[in-house]
Image 1: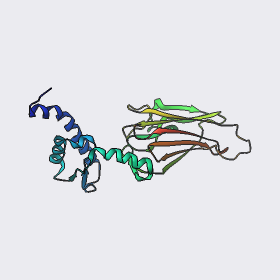
Image 2: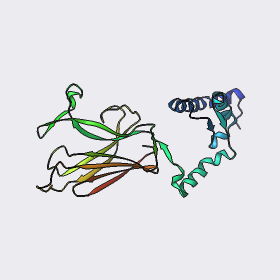
Image 3: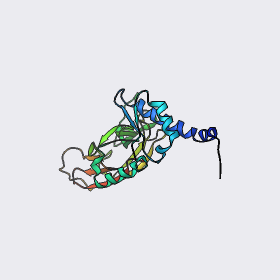
Image 4: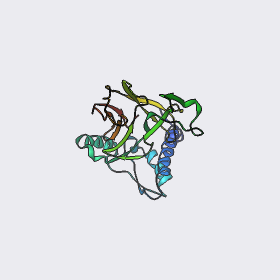
Length: 235
């Protein structure tokens, strides 16, 4: 049996309590002022009187702190309800910034010279992070983002689209610190008919629904489509 003085018990929990308070404060600071009136404390740890006091002392002057009955079962009940009806969660906040790596027309004086590449006599800026959704952005079930691209070079046999994510929302290139690849789409491109007018188009779609981010790329000319799924909550 291990016995601790009350002060020793408080010291044992203090780093965890500080981290929880800091995280809650960060969430509140990132929201519009006055949009949150209630704070619900749920989960197994919410049964701790030490945690309850810490949260009330820190936030009760600006929020009504509510600790419902059966707090330890709240997460389990939520998971069961979501399994029965996924629409019970109508919106989420994206934990990460998601997008794809693309080539954009090079703009002298704006783009770094080390990103300059030339294909078919055209100057391009490589490694551009084209963002579909930003970190902490609210997205609803079924929200869809559509982007259209053209192959960088005529006659290429396939189009490879890499999906990237980052904890930051101000990244500009896929080579920036903290950016990592989380998926890849490879779309075969059959030879284009000679009489086909205009430029070839690749349509990329991101759909936010359940706990997964669904991504697809379609060759508009042939209708061929490839798909991928990314863990939307954990990145």
